[in-house]
Length: 295
Image: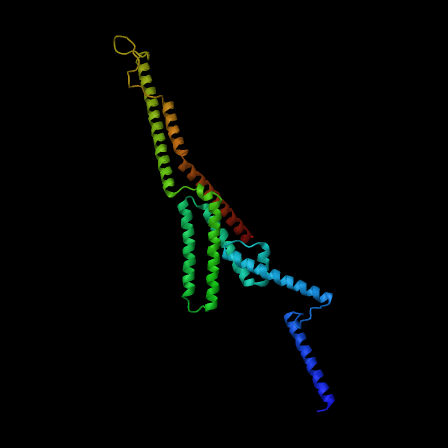
């Protein structure tokens, strides 16, 4: 083999080595692959920007996963990242947040603490049922099963977070228990019945008094309180005096007001008002959506 031939082979080998290194740098965007840290300013700046973007993207992705696992809502920036880089996950999270909004409206419509617990358990049971169905479906690949189960986990955590916020806001504490609601409704019903009875009795007394006065006047007898033929006047007998009709009605109203102002009754009243407000908001939103569809 001549000297020129050896040089040609050596040159070819070096060229191939340089080409391979350059291809590796391009494929990995790592311009330090050959150990040379001296890059020109433009390449160095491009490398720093690329590394910064990669670090920020990785940090944002990790942050999104952590927030989903703990049931926290994503920011608009995080949703934009998902839309750009993980469109399927973005669609799921958007749908999940809509379900979370609906769940929160359900909580606000509850009239007792027991109803809140019932709503919470119903959604938890639905998630468990969905997980059970996924795990026992032979048509779903194992990797897909894990993904679907994690989605149910994210949703359940989101509901748990909404429940926690509802409790910490003080709205849960203001709700009556089912026992308190029943007690307040019973007392109020009895007070109203008593008030109606007193009003009815007072009305009858008043009518009887008017009828009695009319008969005495028609017979030419003065209504001067005369008692017997002796003509002597006497006051009402002890124990026979009855309260005036107006006084009796006031007593009935006071009893009803007392029933309405008990702590249990106040809780029931406020809970009903909040539930009615939430329902009106829901009805208004539904009607607006219907109007848009019709147009």
